Each structure stands twice: as structure tokens, then as C-alpha cells.
Amino acid sequence: MSEQTTPTQPASARGIGFSMLFPPGWREFRADASGEAELTELSTALARDAGRADVVLAIRQYVHRMFDGLRRRGAIGVHLPVASFAGGALPVSLTVVPVRAAAGSSLAGTVGRLAGVAQVEDLAVDDTTWFRWEERSDELDGDHDGASASLHYVIPRPGGTGEAGLQLVFALVTLAEDRESAETRALEALGHGIIGTFQWELPR
Image (cartoon, rainbow, N blue to C red):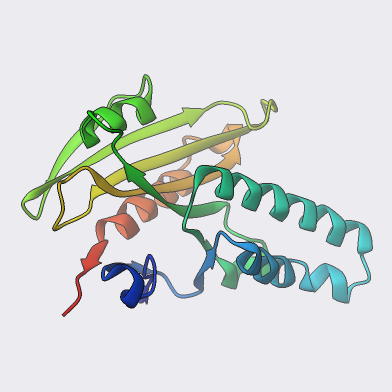
């Protein structure tokens, strides 16, 4: 894997960042208008060059819906394997969302509300506790031919009260018939592996 540093905000504004290791060809897109424009330009290039205005429009609409969802969730950004676009994109993404416990609550309590009915696992990592759970669906947007899975981690921010952190969501989609395939399991292992390289970057 190659290292990709992804600061949450410029060091002067926040004083703390983070990094993860991604395979070659992945790229981060901020959840703002500029990030949406960058991904739209990149993902529509082939269709635009082929004169397929209908495909360009469909991709633009899809990207806009995705970024609208990211902004509603308050996400920092999304990481995508853009190098595969020319040959068919891998159906995976990794989204980063800030998390803060409500007044009078705890990060663990907030995680429980985020996870809903999913079972949360506590992970002892570097003298702190990460939280992890999984969500799976046997349909995709109401279509039973598709399936989806998402791997959720919440990582407490260091140096504070322990009631804030980041939620990392590795999401993948597949055909329903492939949800138990070796390829799907390999993609899930990739998600766990990427998130397992997460490191906070403290100011010097």
C-alpha cells in the first residue's frame, strides 16, 4: 500500500490530522462543492470523450446525490479508488465523518445510537478503545439483485476528553449472488486493512 495523508483540516486551524495507507490509485475528495466538481470531472471523462451526453448526465446526478448525502452527514470527505475508473470502478468507498458525544452523554453511548441494532465490538488500540460494527443489506435501493455492506469504526480523538473522534465507514456494493464470494470477502478485508493503518498526526 502507498501512504496517503489526509488532514482533517489545515494544521493551523485544528492542530491535529490523520493518515491512512491506501493501495495505489486511491484519492480523497472533500465533501464540499470543489470535491464534487473534481469527482464529476474525473468520472465523466470517458463518457464525455465518447459523446455520451446521456451517460454524463446520469453520472453527474449520481455524484451529486452522493455528495449531497455526505454533506447532510457532516462528512469531511470520501476516499475512492479512482485509478480503476477507466476499467470499471471498484464498488467501494471510505467516508470520514466527525463524531461528538452530546452533552451529558459519552462517546460509547453515541456509538450505540449510531450502530442501532448492530452489535458493537470494543477494540483495544494504543491505550484507547476503538468501536467497530458492521451493517449488511440483501438489497440495494430496493433492488434485490444487489447487496451492500458497510464496516464502521469510531476512533476517539487523542488529547481531549475522549468524547469526540472520527467515524470511518468502508462501504461496498455487489450483486446479491456475490455477497458471500471470495472477491467480496477480499474487499471487506481491504477495508479492515486500510482502517487498521489509521494514525492520528499530532502537531510537533
